[in-house]
Amino acid sequence: MNLESYRGKIFVIKYGGAAMADDELKSGFFEDIALLQSSGIRVVIVHGGGKEVTAISNKLGFETKFIDGQRYTDRDTIEVVQMVLAGKINKDIVSVLCAHGIPALGICGIDCNLLKVKKFEHNGQDLGLVGTVASVNTRFLQTLFESGILPVIAPLGADENGIVHNINADNAVASIAKELHADKLMYVSDIVGVFARGGIVRSLNIEDAEQLIAETEIHGGMIPKVRSAFNAMKNNVASVVLVNGKQKNPIISQLSGVNIAGTEFVL
Ligand SMILES: Nc1ncnc2c1ncn2[C@@H]1O[C@H](COP(=O)(O)OP(=O)(O)OP(=O)(O)O)[C@@H](O)[C@H]1O
Ligand SMILES: [Mg+2]
Image 1 (cartoon, protein in one colour):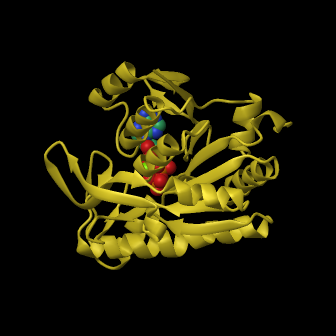
Image 2: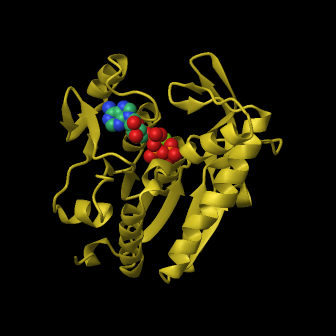
């Protein structure tokens, strides 16, 4: 596919932890990233890793608790989150990208104050050490772009006192896309698209999304995902789409319109 028309554009991509489980899908995703990068597109990857955090927490005997798809994060949990996301998953992704010849740099929101957070308030319920993004150091990201470096970001950040907080990866990616005025925000997860009432919703607006959340057709990790997508759309991000994560080359397929499913978010 000729990506020339996208040269210089900014693509912010959420690589969901859930999508990383399948090796063949994984290699297709990284092929796509290599093609974007070599076409002069400025790519940022933000990754999740919720399933691995839960698996390691369970091995260590820590309880895991979710409220509307967001992890309750106590002091033990934040240590696991930091180790698993910033330590393991981040470096696993970077090593594959580097093996594809891409100069990738693995960082988390703590590095260079990339993501400053404040405590996340969720309908009056305490989620512990969960942060919402207060500011994004876009200058730092622009410096990386200018050097041809692809940032791979683990969703953690520190507050004004340097206390580390977990950030839902979908919330983090939307804030980054917003502040960078990204041309595209794409979510890759382990699903074909947003399912509702027996089918895939190809185009989803905010009123229907809230209705589907109320009906629990959209639940768990999909709740912060769709809400973050609309948050980005309302704030300068022109194109926001949940691509078909079950397709081998999810991003290129989406861009070329071949065999696409996925869900496009519309205001
Ligand atoms: N209406 C829906 N359509 C599709 N998936 C849904 C829906 N409601 C809930 N889900 C669930 O949301 C999950 C995706 O969110 P999840 O947070 O688990 O993954 P992710 O965001 O890709 O990974 P991570 O949180 O680790 O970054 C799907 O695997 C599915 O089980
Ligand atoms: Mg998620």
